Image 1 (cartoon, one colour):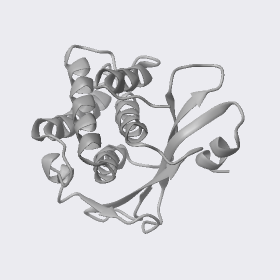
Image 2: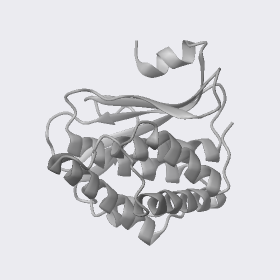
Image 3: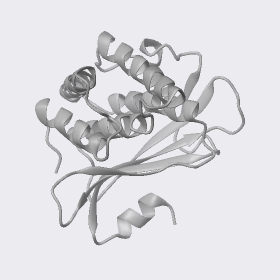
Image 4: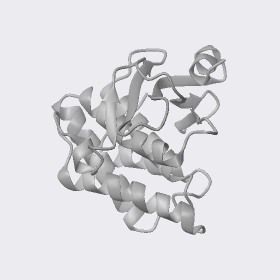
Length: 209
């Protein structure tokens, strides 16, 4: 059973919203990626979707600690892409692929079009806890470069679902997350991704149910 199906049936957690990130088969360039936002117990609001994007970025970044030259390079490349997006700013209609410098490497496809590997992720709240966190399943065979590109695809897709106020919240929250990283936050420490994402939304003025 896939992750989102398990969470929808689970009694120990509440799923706010989730997503399926599907990749095209083979090694074609540009890589075809689709992102489908999946409702939880109710239709996700703008704040829920912004938090989903923040958690996805922070969680992927947390896979790349600084103590290895290989993972440090992955982290540096991913942060560079998202930093470029933040520098340009987010508003409805923004081409984040262009801002991140991956317009020639990443093609956004419609939900269900790519038939390759799929990442599933969801923002959840444990019934016995207050902190929102991300549950995520990543195929072992998925190249890290594809996973990194998917961050841009996720941010672009979520932005496309937001109105002006939602886009402004997304912009503020990503800037706050970037500031935390610039100030030396240990993004790979246990629980760091959760804390960075939740703090960014909260300080940006957003709330998630």
